[in-house]
Image 1 (spheres, helix red, strand yellow):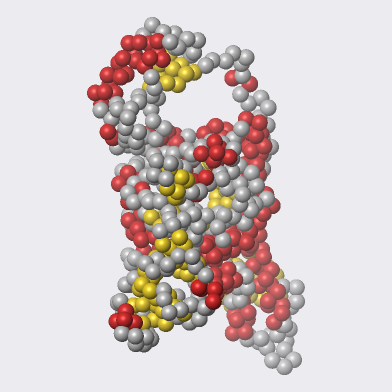
Image 2 (cartoon, one colour; image 1 turned 135 degrees about the vertical axis):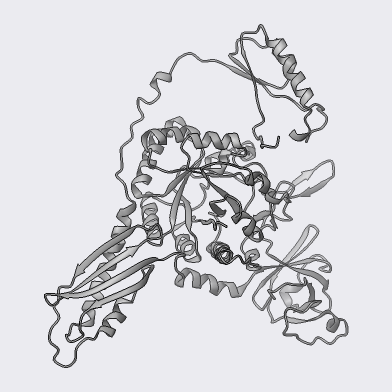
Length: 613
């Protein structure tokens, strides 16, 4: 079983440290332009360089998203931007635009390209085509199902989303934001109109009809690891540091357990921002959200809200019991009410509660539990009867300290292995280090002290003291696996000098790690690119799904013909329901009509065509 790479979103420099410390194997980020999350804070080129150096020192890969559609007048700038990224040493760029892929292959052939999910590579033929273009990894559409992924055959690495927001359309295929507000998702400016409420006039009803629940495949990591998946991806470059810390750390813990063939359960994952979770199309389980904002962890149902208290019948098996300072959300139909718990709640059994004996219980694993929350002044200001509301935990105070610990005291998932050798040459201290990175590459450095050892006036510096100083790793993500000391312990030198040469060695190793990934930047000039293709002659193409048009069309070079549903009254007819005889007959009629016309007739296939269609 292959344990996949864990890819985390990073929207700013503040998020970078959190992602690394929480256990990411790799991170993805964007520059100020050409990324599909234009309204995230994002990175300047200098910040990308700093992020790449920091990540590589921690054995974390960096992928930069350049996944918008590129306009012709941007090509020169974007190619030189890519050249700069290549020189910085990014591990890959994430691209949607196939024309850009061609230019990268020509001008930056050593720059690794990952195909963005916007390429919509949902079938084997598309995968074969993208592999022929030199793409090294493809991010599969979120809409692909487990059995479809299992049947794919490719030498490219496969990456899938496992957590985060879902688009109501196929990724990259939605034009709703463009139509509704002039903000293109394919240019990084999606206004997310699918998250708004809409009114159905036929039902006189308003709801979040287009807003899907968020994706979470946390409980299916074992199935994913058994597929040919190289990388699992968490969505959320515009989410908070808390979201990042909770999501990444929980997925890392679960992946680590998989190494021993163990599975994990987590209620914490629901406390990171979500609109409710679904398994998406991976397990045929998409569903729409009940609200556009954070829902949280489901606790149970409110069974009573009288006598200045709210009584919640907790779901059996729930491990997370709300405490003072935590945030709750009560949802009933289209009404919701949120508040913070102001006093310590009481956990008891439903039987105790019904008998009026509210005796606190300590065993949180018991069944038929209720949580009694005392209403204070602010808890009484709700506009609907809370009975039968579904209760959710939206904020967990206890997690705040965990997030801070991850941010300030965590470490990278894989540390570099360091062997130190200390010796004295002509009375001067020498320190040599051999650093083995996660990619198995080795780096060696040596430093010489400027202050010599001397005969001691009082007492010498022994080998134990020297080893103790050398084992201090400071801020560095090094795992010192060996310390060799060639010294008899009879001389003296200030401890500060030992610390000094250790710091000098670590700094040298750090700089060598940086230089290991960097490349020479090349200036790219596209002024003469494609001149041979430029012409003053233009040709027109025509799209139709109506046979009657074929006999009337003139002065066009091509006609793209799409086969309409057999029964036009069935609006949502799926491709599986098409009658093959009807399709063949339709095409034969089209050929007969167009036989003596001066245009090419091209059968337009559906934009989305799964292998089983």
